[in-house]
Image (tube, rainbow, N blue to C red):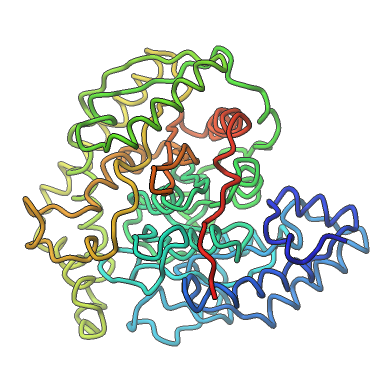
Amino acid sequence: MIDSCELTNLSISEAAGALRRGETTSVALTQATLARMELTEPTLQAYATAPAELAMAAADRADRHLAAGRDSGPLQGIPIAVKDNCYSKGIVTEVGSKVLAGFVPSFDATVLRKLYAAGAVLIGKTRCHEFSCGGSEPPTRGPWDLSRFPGGSSIGSGVALAARSAFGAIGTDTGGSVRIPASINNLVGMKATYGRVSAYGVLPLAWSLDHVGPMTRTVLDNALMLGAIAGHDPNDANSARVDVPDYSAGIDGGVRGARIGIERDYFLYPGVTDEVREAIEAVIAALASLGAEIVSVSLPELTNTRETQMTIRMVESASYHRRQIQEKGHLYTPGTRTTLEMGQVILATQYLDALRARERFRAAMQALFKREKLEALISPTISVPAPLLSDVWKPRADMDNGETPTDGFVHQVYPANLSGQPALSAPGGFTQAGLPIGYQLMGRPFDEATLYRIAYTYEQAQDWHERQPPLVYD
């Protein structure tokens, strides 16, 4: 049997193999994860709630099913965390807000239902910014450096994974909120194609931009999780009727001959720090040495993606929360309420202009991939390493030129939310101060498998994903 101290360092695929070889049990995995949580949570506060008794019961059930030959796949018996904006039947779901204090859903979000069907153990619900909009400051702290911002809005999912208090986690991504905490915490985060993963039962931020996605410590683990949660859902009007492949099949096929584009004017603009720029250039060089063909491309339409995305996001968020703000506005934190109300002053004509701009951008991206015969675009995930918490939450009026450190986050990630293309963030190095740097791959619609193959090839040539946070939690 594997020593309990080593269990939480296993990847999902390693733990799945150990379960089937009889080297451990789901009960042991869950006990070790809860013990790790007990050690780290007083400092990191990644979880909003962690129903230990339910988790242990699910683990025992997973073991009994395996013993009886009922194998539901690689997630069976694996402790997985889920962001607290996903409905969970019988488990409090507050989405970081007093507005929903004590709210217990009567049904499970489709993504949670699919995890249960795959035999996963729900280890807990992770903290997020209030209603996922970034207007509040959760108490969550980053395991790589407690003084630095650990990412948002899927903040708890990223921290729990890095701290080894979960083997995998679910996040949501409207403007980078799976990929940003993945980059900051040395993780793999996938925002799959819009509609690939059902958003039914997930409290929306902006329904035409929202994505639900897996976060893991390795590329293979991410492929296994996406395979479990993807697929058409008749309860979600935006769910795509597209077959779900085995994302792990062919993941080791290499990158020889793969054409990977880099749009330097936009993605390596002057706001990218030197250390991030050097790390991404090193990733590009490594992929080229492994056989990929790196292609310089130009896409002027990228310039207005932030303004377009923000207009759509603000209007749709304001629409969803309008009545609730009227009735319970005093329960929102001031920052969240202000953020949500901003969309109420945007004209309908401006919203429609943004929708048309999105369609033009989607067409331009599709044309670029076709014209250049691209399999992916590569870029930094975010332009900067994790900034200090004290700078992130400093009033905007106190910042030079009215900018905040988090403005450097969204530049790289917004385009994929706008186009709906799949985008993956994976570990790409570290700063001299030991802070993780992530790189991003954007792909063709419903071609997540290619992104996994490219990222897996790079991962096997490096050891970034094996590095753990240096902090010791007393």
